[in-house]
Length: 127
Image (cartoon, helix red, strand yellow):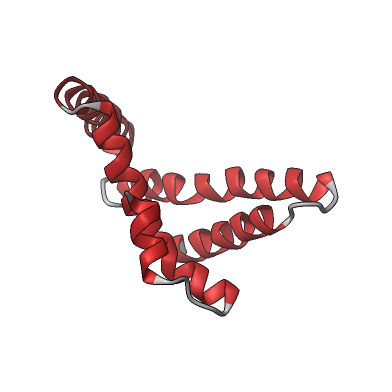
């Protein structure tokens, strides 16, 4: 079920991405769909945790799921970003991130455009 939600989210993202000069309601509809469909897997996590425990422990299971989701999700992510910001120079992080994004986007460009960029252009744009 989660894979269905993510596949539909991908469809909505592609529609939003490809609607450059189209009607504005398509943008609104795809943004609504993205927000709606991302909530599905999050709800499934809580629902699955409630299915695994007896009826008397449902509140505890929901609370612990939320607690660990917050502790391991938000708190550690915030701490990690703070650690990186304190120890890594911003321009190095920006360059490495830009280079990674270019390398990761290259196969998609080839697939969508039907042609390839010269490798020297790829290397120059990453530096």
